[in-house]
Image 1 (cartoon, helix red, strand yellow):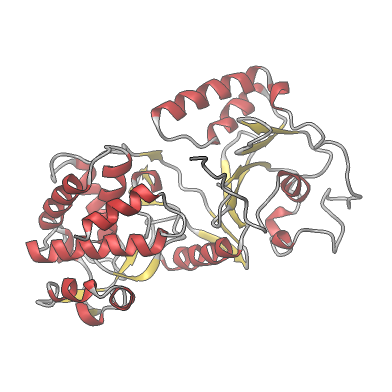
Image 2: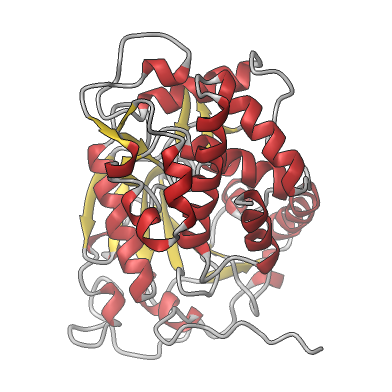
Length: 381
């Protein structure tokens, strides 16, 4: 069977639009890992700047990190091989800032004040996957290649919705939980960078592992009001806004979408449940270790009326399936044990696992690979 290529959405970015909208036309541009499928666009700089800025080429798995290392070395020593030919030739008259004249800019860029030329800052652009959620991430750097601010720019109608949701989430987050919002527009959000290191993409064997303790503390801070009490996680959540499971704002859409959820929710009926802030894509690649503890980034799938335990289950599913290559049964066993360690009964843990898997199916069904959807369906049995 011939595998169909994923087509670009009708309103997605092209490299040409990117070059003419984000950079002055006289600026020489380079593309990594190559010109045909660019993921990172950079401007000319010193060898040190090329080395530091090329580190923003996306890579998480070991094989991808080794490939990135080779690309970074080649780009630092021989940048001419990564030149985006033709981008230095003017294609349209420009104003003094190097941007398109009024009325000629692409609709995606009309309201983004950050795209005005800032002579004291360097700009690196990461190009998101060309799908219905496509975005650009603009990294604004000082002359030492340190990030000053970050702008996410939507490329599709769905991405506009996601960027707007992230702006809403960042405005509501408690301190040190996520990035600090600077400003937002209809199709962009700009925020301060989170300075930290990536965490290990693993599932610790012991609930007393330092990583799990840090994750618990972060999840506690997702409560709408940060509680002063200590672990365990479930008992520490803010109890001022509580609902029966059958009427919980986070569960109502699931009850309407799938009849099986009615029986699952019955197992949660023995107590009232608080509202928590829900990240929506709580996974190792969206967590950074900072001097203040763990901090979560990429809040575009978040919501302010979430259910306890859903982010925890999502973390286990994503890490177990994608990093450990676990099957559904092993993920189920691990998740149930972890939820019980956090204060859930066996019945509550089982119901929360199924509801979290259903939420993931509903949230990612349009773009997720079939293998992950099958795994989630298996967890709901």
